[in-house]
Image 1 (cartoon, rainbow over the protein chains, first blue to last red):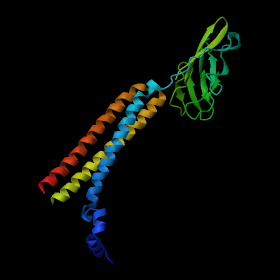
Image 2 (image 1 turned 30 degrees about the vertical axis):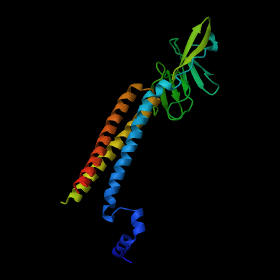
Image 3 (image 1 turned 180 degrees about the horizontal axis):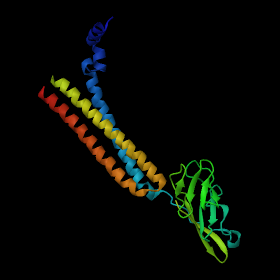
Image 4 (image 1 turned 120 degrees about the horizontal axis):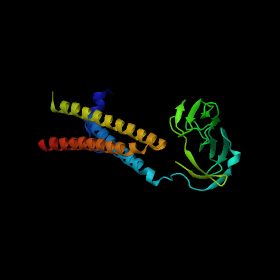
Length: 170
Length: 76
C-alpha cells in the first residue's frame, strides 16, 4: 500500500478521524504553533528562575558569626601561617601573618577545584599547587592560574595576646 | 504565494524568533548563576529584568499567533 492509498484509507476511517482531527497537510502547520506555545512556557519558567535567583541572596545563609579562639598571638610569627577549622570541623582555613605584621585569614579551599591552598612566603600570596592558582593576601582575589573567584575571607580579632576567629564572610 | 504558504513562512519566522529569545534567556540564567556563586549580586536584578522583557516579547508573539488564527477562522 503506497502513501496515497494509506492516506485515502485513513481518511475514510471515521474513528481514526475522531482521534486525530488534523489534516496531513496541516500537520507541520500545527506543530509550529505547538512549538511556539511550548517555548513561551519555557520562557516563563526561565524568567521565574531568573527572578528567584535575583532574590536568593536574601534567603541564603550569609557567613557565620561564632567567636572561636584560634591561638596565642606569639604562636603566629611574621611571615608565618597556621591552619584551623571554622565554622565547622569540615571547613579548612588558613591564617597568615604577613611580613608587615598584618593578620589575615581565608578559607583554605581553592575556588577552582577545591584543593588546599598554602602560604607562599617568597611570593607573599596563597598558592594552590594543583593547577598553579594564586591568590593575593589583601583580599584573597585570584591573581594567577585558573581560579576566577576570590577565597572566602575569615575575620580575625587580636586581643590580650590571643587571636579569635569572629566571622566567615560568604 | 498562497495565504497558507505566507502563514507557514510567518510562523517559521516567529518560531525562530521565540527560540532565539529562549536561548538568550538560558544564557542570562547561566550568567546569573555564575554571578550568584561569585558574589557579584548587582548582576542579578538586571539579568532578571532582561529575562522578563524577553518573556513579554515571547508572550506578545504568541498572542499575535492566536489572534492571527482567530482572524483566519472568522474570515472562513
